[in-house]
Length: 168
Image (tube, rainbow, N blue to C red):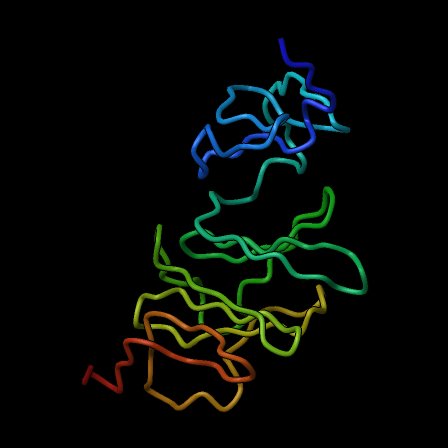
């Protein structure tokens, strides 16, 4: 018999063989979690925010003045939520977006979020973190140029799968 104190010290470690796990580590578990060096039943998840205004196909967290906001995009609209307030941030000019499941991409550069619906028919959008303002076309973006994906690399924005007018 081996006595094991602090059975929740390490939690579940699935990527190491069982023989190499330290005492108190678990190789598998179902509906449990480790808290305060103990293992407890985990009853699942709970709703944090009210129901979303649209089905979210993409989610991006941002921090505004120390508060956590979640930006979420549906097929045609972008919203942000902090607590129970859902604010429509869809661009003021140009109408709804043409996003779909698995087409939205986003990044944060200089603390500001940039989102792209990936449709190849809308410019990447940026937001100034003011909930009174909407998303708008990314500043200095070349006219008639679209991309399927946009990301950051260090202090640079990188656009991928670019189409200029009609030439890919």
